[in-house]
Image (cartoon, rainbow over all chains, first blue to last red; front, side, top):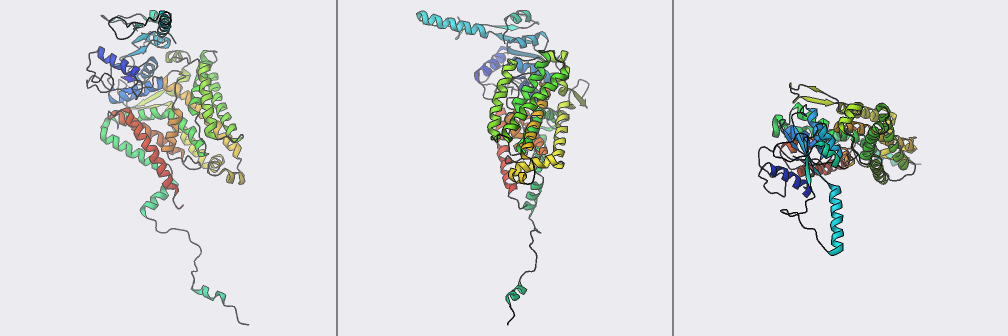
Length: 182
Length: 359
């Protein structure tokens, strides 16, 4: 698990814990990563969300256990760094790296097989919907309602991969490429 | 006339010439004296002890060719930048812009190749020139305009970093593209292995970056100790006025030091591409603080004129050993920062103690 920072900012914690929750892993305190006791987790390390940190964190975890097979990363630059560390020991083809964000270089890295899948978000949509919500409130005082069944307004997210798995909705790299940003 | 007898009393006095040699030094004083003569000894001792302790606690997981050479790879960038920082700090200066110069140089190497289509060799030379010019500007502000190095490089840090983001538009050049079109940029990441198994696991791994780091430190150690330029660097750091009066060209020495530091940072930028595979404008944000940490733990005095560049290398390795060792022990990453903080203060306290030695 390659996380953001030792201060455990909420964006890093929510992504990390959401990933583990998807696997049905006991989270312990859901507001904190690193307190899980499941032996399938080799460890957590921090990356600062860039290539350099991703490589170092991956190396540290590989020193702990060279047989790691799935790597979660906080964002795509960290994923690219982790890939370099795996390449250095010749394991880049048998380890699955997954990530979050959906920036264009990240989606290109899925096409090249660096990253297995990424959870794509839509910052431009968030911005336009946000402005529309403000305009609606300024006009007649309507406040945005949470998406049904959730306690927040969901601006959408899609899993981008060219190796779709049964039972998991995903879009292709080509579609992801059309929607990517940055 | 009675003879003058003023000097008669002297017959009882000591006939020894002034004597400053200390025949009997205690064990502690002898040790203190040794440390004073070899400033790299303290970090070396700390390094050996910390490797031994982590080796005992973690066994072969830590005390293996794989893990120990991994630490070398992890400190390669900080070590190269630390070499630049060392020569600046030896002149009683400081360079906060080292990380920014490194990143800008790597971005220039990448963008010149991919945006303008220049041959990769030419782009690398442009990148090295870019770092050298940044260092030269620092040197002129410090030596000619006599501005404090802290202020000059604080400003340059911001200016260079902003230039880096403006110029690169914060765009990453991906590893795969570099590998296919300009693999020379990744030269410092080329590696060879000794003693790995068939699947490529374990064994000692050396990258060109690591070899460059060791060669650079040895070359600088020689230059600082055995060339006129090196002695001038120490003299300027110890007392610039005395150096000036002894005929050292203080301004020229200072400018040469900052310029060389810029060039070394540009090489660090090249090595950075080798390490992370890609050209990323957001890398190296903490390189200035990490390099100063390595220098201080390595026993180089922030007041200039004292210390050895080998100590900086040991200092960088100590940080690397603690980072990996604590992580393998399963400690929260915060503990690493806490212990490194303690090491910094400890190193400066020891420096003060050694300074009190009766030389």
